[in-house]
Length: 229
Image 1 (tube, helix red, strand yellow):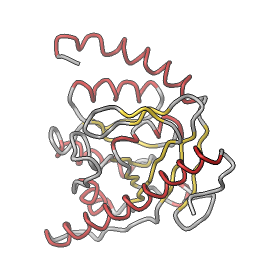
Image 2 (tube, one colour):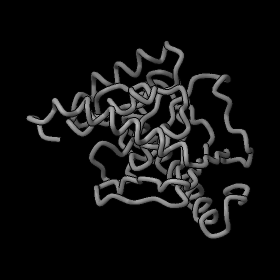
Image 3 (cartoon, helix red, strand yellow):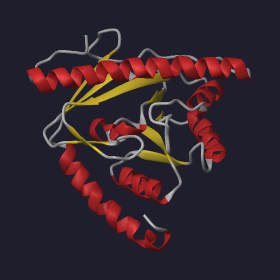
Image 4 (tube, one colour):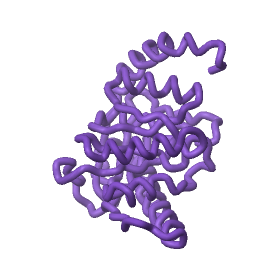
């Protein structure tokens, strides 16, 4: 949204939030863990740092976790942030491209709070499904385990944007596959940081493939498909 139209953002966010809330109520949500359990990691066991690709940014609106999500500071990010806030999803403003250091510091400070943290580690401008180091840095500095989350939709429109942003169709099914928590050591060297970025990216790619495969089987066989295995 252009700078001169920024005054429209609150009004647009209010309308979009109402539409999204009604839209998401039509969706079915199925979540399972990577190890085959139907009841994934219990948030009560400790605070977590969830990582999921930018294209699945609507997923928290459907699952409504107690989470704060990193949203970029450009005008489109402002619209997304205000929509999230109206839907009771906490936000932190910033990205690796703009305001990143301040946002990362805020995320580190918020580790003392009660909510989980969420990062879309290929955002805000891609490349698609290529992990940037911010999520690993935050995990290293806070001690919070990274939990890779794969997201799939049985039916969705795909935007032509860099991330092929997914807009699930009404009545479709969202599938989520929760990976094993990954504890990143403190005070990473540069080689260790690079190694951990590759490791987390690989884990996120794996659970995403499982979630998308699960969603495809639901599309072909029906919602009774039990899990991603």
